[in-house]
Amino acid sequence: MLAFLTRRLIGGLLVLFVTATLVFFAVFALGNPVDVMVSPDADQAERAAAIARLGLDRPILEQYASFLWNAVRGDLGNSFVYGKPATTVILERLPVTLELAIVAMVIALGIGLPLGIIAGLKPGGLSGKTIMSGSILGFSLPNFWIGLMLISIFAVQLKWLPSGGRGPTVDVFGIPLSILSLEGLKYLILPAFTLALYKTSLIIRICETGTRTVNRQDYIRTARARGVPPGRIVTVHLLKNVIIPVITVMGLEFGAMIAFAVAVETVFSYPGMGKLLIDSINRIDRPVIVAYLMVTCLIFVTVNLIVDALYAVLDPRVRFSASKA
Image (cartoon, one colour):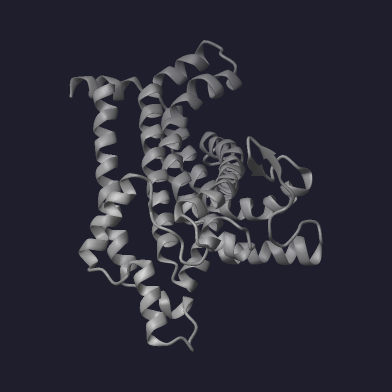
C-alpha cells in the first residue's frame, strides 16, 4: 500500500514539474504586460524602468530557472496588478471556488446516484428510459447557455434567486463561507446547479451501467433468494460496488470543476478563481495566470492521490496487486 502511494506521489511530482515548465513558456508568449500597466504617454525611460522592475529584461532561461527555484519555495512572483504575491491573490479566491465546486458535487451526487441506480434496476421500464434520456441534456447543453437560461427564468422572470455575485458570508476560522447563511446560499444555488448538471448526467450513466452489471451477479441473486429486503440489497450489496467507479471518476471531475468553473463564474459574476483568471488574462497579469495554473495542477494531483488511497481502501484487489508489485 505504501509503495503504491509512493509511486503515485512521485508521478504527481513529475506532473507538477512538467506543468510548471509548460505553463511558464506558454504564459511567457503572452503580450507585453508593460503595455497594459504603463501609461501610453510614458517615455522610453519609464518603460525600461517598469520592465526592469518586473524582471522582464533578463534572459528567458534565467527567468525560468528563477521561476522554478522560487516555485519550490512557494513563491510564484508578485502580481503586476495587485502588487502582492500571486499565490496570495489566488488563495484569497480559492475558498470561493472550492465552496462552489463542493456544493455542485453534492448536488450531482445527491441527484445522479439515486437516479442512476433506479435506471439500472429498471432499464426497460418507463422510469429508466426517462432518466437515461434526460441525462443526454446534461452532456449536450453548454454550461454558459444553461446559466443564462437559469438567470432568465429564476432571476429575471420569477425573481426567486439573485442573478449573480456572491451573497453575505460567515467567517469560519478566517475563511468566509456563503453557504452558512440563507441569503448567501441563494446566490450559490444557480451557479452550483449549472456546474453540477454535466456531472449529474455523468454519474447517472456510470451508476446505471454499474447497477446493471452488479445486479446480474450471483451474490445478488442469492441475497434475493434468501429473502433479503430489496432496500438492504441496494444499500449494502449493490451500492458498495457501484460507488467505486463513481469515486474514481468524480475525484477527477472534482478537479475539473475547480479548473473549468471559469465559464460559470463569468456568467454569474461569481468572484472565484475562474473569474480572476479571465481578468488576469485581460490585464496580462502573468504571475497570477501562472499561479492559477500551478494551484489548479496541485489540486488535481492532490485529489488524484486521495482518490487512489480511497480506491485502495474500498477495493481490496488494488491493495493485493500493489503489494505484489
